[in-house]
Image 1 (cartoon, rainbow, N blue to C red):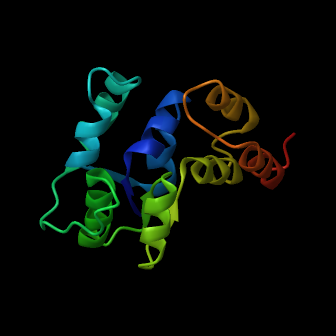
Image 2: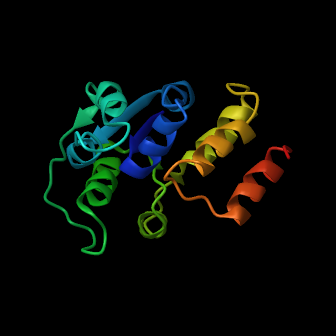
Image 3: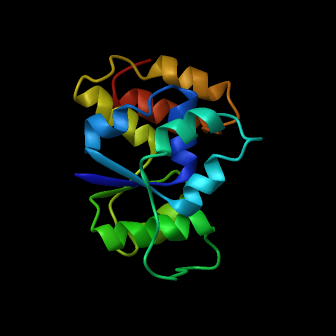
Amino acid sequence: MMLIANSSALITLAIIDKLDLLEKLFGKVYVPRAVYNEICKKDKDESIKLANYCKDRVLDINSNTNFNISLGKGESEAITLYNEKNADFLLCDDKKAKKFAKSFGIKVIGSLGVLIKAKEVKLITEISPLLKILKESPIYIDDKTYALVLEIRKES
């Protein structure tokens, strides 16, 4: 399988030290150049961890497609790379980008979906400690989503 990753979900997984789940669940993981440039800015939290993780996974897109001016360059390149590589999943947490991608039949999974899937296949034993770390980080998870993820995986 192949997964194309966008910045927000990569940052989320980096915060909880779970980037390794991506290869274990999806095999090949690639990052478009615009996403790499965005997440590896020196002033960003997790930039060193993300630069190390992504350095051998960066791909350039072959076209100049800009799907939607309301999407950022990273989201546009991720969707383009997904199509160019005929990938299996797009890793994305941005609501607007997810909705746009799904409207074109792209299979989208978010960072919390990765955690749910990882628990299903027993790569992790609990999601709740990871969600607690995220709740204390700059990553926003609304209370409804937080509760829903725990309910899905039968945690409290």
